[in-house]
Length: 174
Image 1 (tube, rainbow, N blue to C red):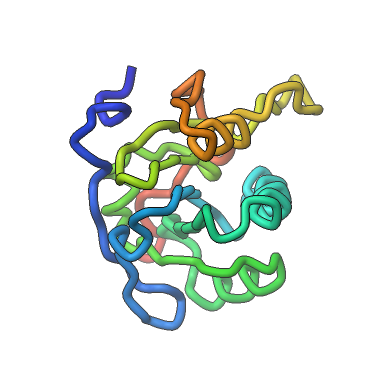
Image 2 (tube, rainbow, N blue to C red):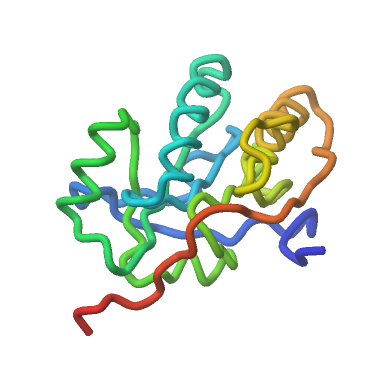
């Protein structure tokens, strides 16, 4: 079990710039359920999950904030901006040095983390159970986790293995 989950000490705080340079912190979203989505402009798994997340956000409304985190060292800002715009993502934060990815232990894009309104990490892992061998979702882990929190319950499960493309930790330009 991940020691960050349900430790009642709070999710690790952070401050990151969006793609235009404006700073955001986790504290800016206190009181709302926060979905942190480690994201890639090039990963097909991230693109699939983006569409699902946007549909879910429409249903959840202002109760839930989505923080999309671009953490791949090899994806330049212009590519991030182009893909974020094309996919209709409302907010993309840039973790250029992968500090947040390291802090949270993010492994893939997507890798999702759900924080309750009190700032406690309550779920981490995959959006659903789609994998290379299982092409259609039969379980929707993220939806279940968020809806449990919105109903005043703890998510079950609170952790699943993430599935997607590996986060690139170092750029090829170094």
